[in-house]
Length: 170
Image (cartoon, rainbow, N blue to C red; front, side, top):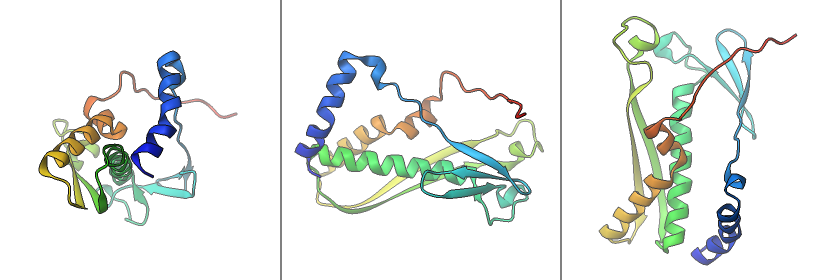
């Protein structure tokens, strides 16, 4: 896909969202079923992912850790966003890799230390690109990618409301 194809694809969507802002609000959903032991089977749309405890909290390491899945979602979103931005700007990227890493203090998760945070303390995303883009182009590519990466912005800013509830199945 080139920049013209991308603009052609997105133009009617952008116009619709300008005219009907509520049409741009889409509710994304994820589902899972509690599994054997301490696991949860998550429907990914393409397959079934079985999540479990991280080995640092007693897990076997055979199941996916939800923290790893969060970083994977970040990598996926950042990679797609970077590709989209590069396409829109006409920046040729021959190949590339995206990696994300984050620090978690499992004392917080396990309740060992009430002062230890629960969750990631630091997350870093790194792009390794094979491109002839100038330093200025790369700076703009990174800046715009950061601005429009939904997962990165959600991690940075949090959400206005995040709650949980239990609904009885009868």
